[in-house]
Length: 247
Image 1 (spheres, rainbow, N blue to C red):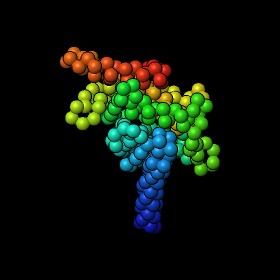
Image 2 (cartoon, one colour):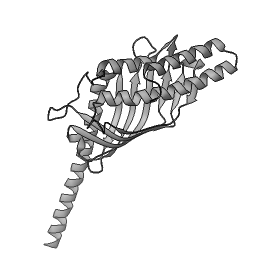
Image 3 (cartoon, rainbow, N blue to C red):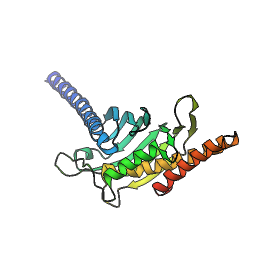
Image 4 (cartoon, helix red, strand yellow):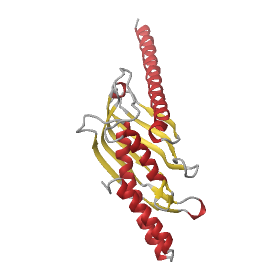
């Protein structure tokens, strides 16, 4: 009898493990498919997430290889690439229409800043998101299984050890970006749309790129490239004013 109970317990444990692994894979597939489907509609560019892992019990997970392409009129490369994104959300909230994320942590992101007179690829990307979402949060809606619009609440967002390449090719100048830390995104509103969340984050990212471009202008000017320095400075100022400065 004891052996039978041990045998039965082993079977139950194995089934539970299989169910856990299966659910983890299922959740990761949902996240990956959602990003790859909704992302291009939001940015108007190529968006590819290579993979996602998410624990159904702890709510922790990792998104890997998020590449966002440049808007039309710029190079065929990426506007930015995020190799690894750590997330920690309220367990099982992903199954509802109000997803509460305790933390999003991005380490070593790579941004490319291309400019033409007073235009830039990052500025055009932000314009795309802003035009799609609008001031009232319009644009394409992501919906939960119950048919209700998805709303997100992010308690903490951090981005650190970022790099921005000013220009492309051999002439590109790579500089560090200042760290970014945001808190309680969507908390006061009772949740915000994916578009509103993306715009809020990218607006802060743009401020970091502006800071890096100002630093680059100083370096270029110090080496005698006054005209190039002025061009970098003007594109940074245009991006800053377009999206309300550093806030």
